[in-house]
Length: 401
Image (cartoon, rainbow, N blue to C red; front, side, top):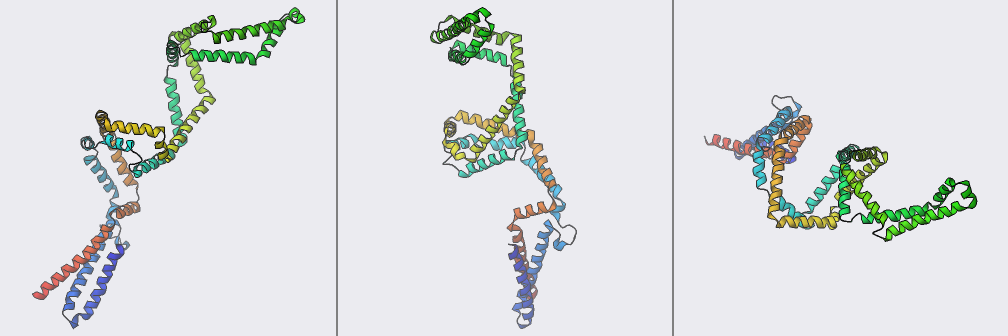
């Protein structure tokens, strides 16, 4: 369009020269000359006007040119004020949000994500990936780890463990655990048979060792322990199982009500959190979660095809059916938007103003010039044509008078 506008100006100059040369031969050429002459003036004037908005014409420091670069800070402040006064007002945001049914739109998309706009899915996917990759992973990971550790530190673990144990025992959910402990104890006894025999041998007297009774004693101890554990595993009413359950009841009560037990659990929790192995485990949890989020974001269609997709579709169908739920979500979104406008409106306005101030003159010139685009060149084209018609009209009136 710039070439077309410039080409028209050159064409008018050529036409003016030709008409001026041919004017003595016929009076009609005077009208052509008048049109071309005025068209050149109009085209040059509008070229100057358009150029003066963004830069100095021909690089000459003519006053009141390069208007936008010289006033970019004021433009940024005015734009920020315009946003604050006409857009980021809580009343305006609430009125606009009241006309938007965010929940219905979300419900339709969730109920049929593959049949909806692929552009929305791909755009959300790209945005999620870019956000996850652009964040400082070391810093973000440290924040996540710190938040996790802080949450665990704030938990009063002892009463929680006591209540959990008490609830499990009330519903007999502790029995599989007790059975597992008994089976594990039998395996430990079997695996450490030699160690038990060595301990009996070392602690037995010389007479027992000389007569070989220490071996008999070892066999009796091992066999007795093994039989007791086997009986405990097979007999739900075994006395030792009852003793174990009594101990668990006492432990549940101590965990909830005994200050010294709570202190021991708290010390154990803090020591565990300070352990490098635990820190490494937490780091691994965060990295696994981050990689999982990246995989889901890069392949949203695969995610939507799995169990997560089925859950999202059910949520979408529920949103489509349940009017009360939709109203609740829309009300929540409206409050969030109004709250953001009220709390962060000045921050957004300041961000706009500071961003424009931070641009250099060439950046803002290029961005505004590209944003307006062809219309700038149409101003030049229209100026050339209108100027020519005005010149033609003036010449006609002059000849008539």
